Structures are given as structure tokens and as C-alpha cells.
Image (cartoon, rainbow, N blue to C red; front, side):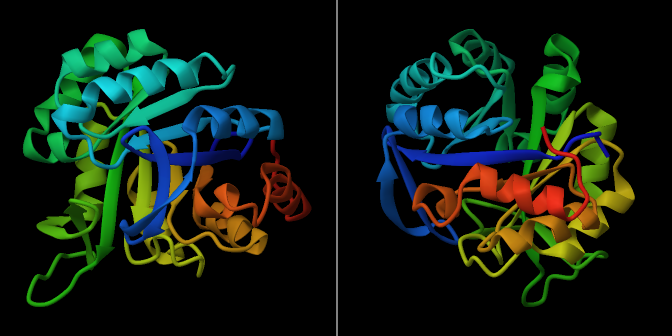
Length: 256
């Protein structure tokens, strides 16, 4: 685990606006991404994650523009994900001001993409975004956790624990682990999932999905997360970055 726990707000962006829902459904407007990014920087965010939740080609130009304008407001690392399909996409996002780039579906379809990105830009640039949930129906993964795509709506049948281990071998520098069961519920992080991934990888883990109270964050770190990420609780003023850092500090963890 890294020396200091990072607190990371996440901006889920659709057509140039920040949105948030539950399980990526019933999205509602949460504000302007550039304004929110500036506010979180003022609050002391350690990093910022920007996810294009629709990532259709017709809106790609809008995303590059918003990324560039957001990067101008920040002096902390910016991770951008959503619709990244090639080394060229990564190159362009880095040129727009991103410090790290998240990949998800494209890496599932072509695992070699992880190695190609890491080889060209270094593994510190590559964040593997994993939308995992507890397996359902007749599918049976060894770990009980399954990788999904399309905001959790499409099953892949891929064991999430096997996948993160494989991604680390290919060159992923960090895992953004999002629990689709917990996403947007504000009922707490999936601690069992975090522990399962921590046992298998040595690279940093960002815990995502389910934060609802400041008390939810320290257990995620205890379970093995190096960073904690949240969205709606910050967007709608339920808590600040400072509130989360105080809770972590009170629990005995070092924060920046």
C-alpha cells in the first residue's frame, strides 16, 4: 500500500455534463465538470477521475474539449476513461492534459491493448477500470465475482479476480475497482471484493462504488485499497474531501 491514502472524486460525464445515478441508470444532472473539478481541487482532492459514461463517437470531440478545459483547472493528476480503444486514443488524451488513462471494455476485447499502452507510455499511465459484480444466474466464476461491461448491464463470464491478475501481468499500473452491486447505493464499499483483489495484485487499488458516509472510507482502506473514490456524495454536498480525509486520519491512516 502507498504511504498516503488518496481521496479521488469521480466525474461521470455525459454530453459535457456531470451525471450520477444508481447502477449507472436514471442519470441526473450534477453540474459542470470544469466547475466541479476546480471546486474539488480547492477542497484538497489528491486526484480527479473523469469518466465518459456514453463514450459514443459522436460525442468524442466534446469529451476531448471538456478534458482539456478540466485539465487547465487542475494541478493534481487527472485520469480519463470511457471509450478508450487504442494507443492513439491514449496519446490524444495525454496531449489534452490527462495524466493517466482508464481502459475497460477495449481491454476485455483485446487484452494485448494493455501491453501496447504500457510499452509505449509506461504502466503508470494505465488504469484498468473493472466494473465487477457478484455472479448471477447460471454463470459460475471461481471467485464469485464477474467482470461486466455496459455499466454492469452486460455479463462477460470473466472471473474478476483472474482478470485483475492477468492485467497486472500485461502491464496495468493501477486497478479502479468498481462494485456494480454497490454503485450509487451509498450503502458502503464491497469490502469482500476489495480483499479478494488485494490478495492477487501488488499494484494500487482504487475502491469505488457505494460510499455514503464518511465512516465507509476507512474500512475500504483496511480491506486493501490504496485510494478511495466517490461521486454523488461529493457532487450533492453530502460530504467534502476534507471530511473524508479527517475520517481517514482519525482512523490512523496517513493522508496528503
